Image 1 (cartoon, rainbow, N blue to C red):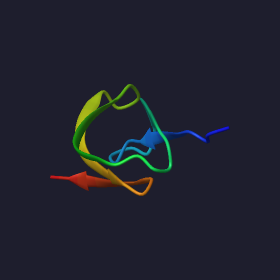
Image 2: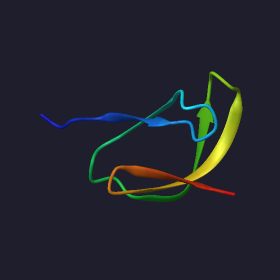
Image 3: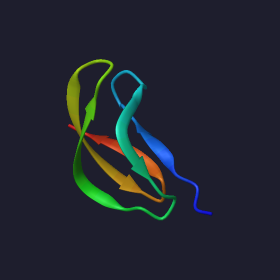
Length: 53
């Protein structure tokens, strides 16, 4: 069974509505945080999220 994890908001640290697998890679992915009501552009590589300004 594959383990999924939530993408965390780089601003407030809350869970976004996006799940990823450990082998997921994304560039310039827009994620929305329902907690702080903001959108952020992130890169995902090797299961780690990096905020892009």
